[in-house]
Amino acid sequence: MDRLQPNTSAFPSEVWNDPVMSPFSGMEGHRFYLSQTPLETGIGSPIGDKQFADQSAPDNLRALRLQFPFLEVIPVPARSVSVLLTNANVARDVQIPDGMVAIIMRGNNDYYVSFNGAAGVPVDIGNNQSLDTQSVYKPEGYLMYVGNKRSISVIAPNANTIVTFMCYPLVPINPV
Image (cartoon, rainbow, N blue to C red; front, side, top):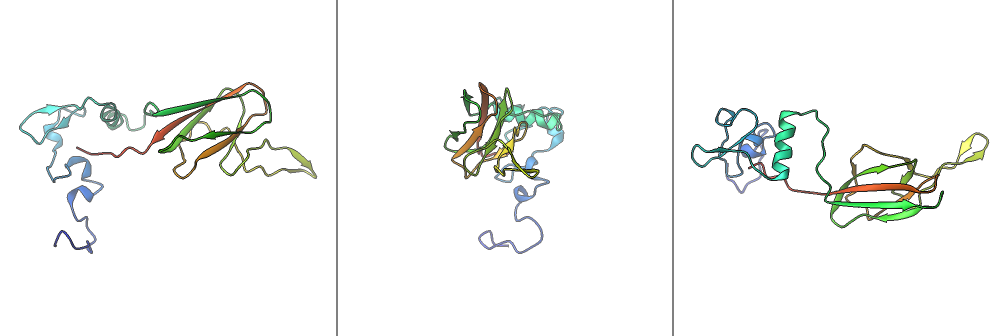
């Protein structure tokens, strides 16, 4: 098949487009074989017989996740934004830093966030119904996608609530 034509077969056009084999191949098609790497901790080199482990933080995190696939670990956030909600029931808009696509939130008290305008604390409006605030209660522990969002509204029913937003940019992953 000509490299410039679209792939019409049911198979990947190149080995690095194959989700099963891509971790073991370089973008130029060089193959890495597990038998050439030191157990489960190293990354092989296509140059000679040298074996090494990359020393950057993203590479070390990827190696850690390979060894412990169910370990819940996150990288250090690229940016963090913390807000102090000094007054109860007063919504505050928090600007998401440019380039961030994911956030993790943590707070010391109850809080609500809204991606649809002013956040609100649910209140009873009578007849066994609550006011629909479009707010999410304390979404801690979730990595939330915010790629197209510019701000988040946050509100707390208690004064002096601190909410921290750990922000992550989209970082391209090069398997080599």
